[in-house]
Image 1 (cartoon, rainbow, N blue to C red):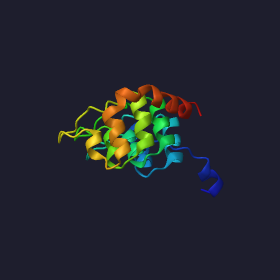
Image 2: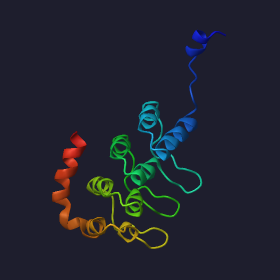
Image 3: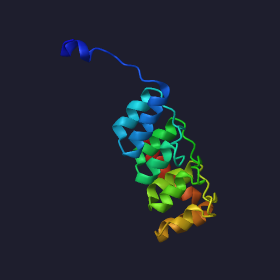
Image 4: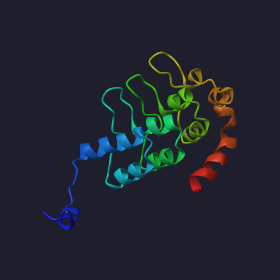
Length: 154
């Protein structure tokens, strides 16, 4: 088989393979891969087997706003939980991803959710501004809404 013929062969991956590839792309922070696998129909709610992470957890962990936005547009649950009951907001707290937390909060992430150790996202951050935001979000929703609306429309 010559090289030209080989390039024209299309192999259609199985659905679970597509889902796993999306998860891998999110794990490695590969936005090009994320776009590719979403276009091929990957499930944004595909659960990683070991710890139960969802693609959105990785986007939040990296603080990748483009990836976060894309996954949410494709239907990712902003309150989806890992096996240890952590949401994407917990990942933002753990890795001090303030901008990602703001987007998640505005789109309905619940800052009062506790993980299996009884910790809320605000308990996991060392960033005082993020802690304040997570603890007092309900008082500042309208201010944050303006910032998120601006970002989501760009």
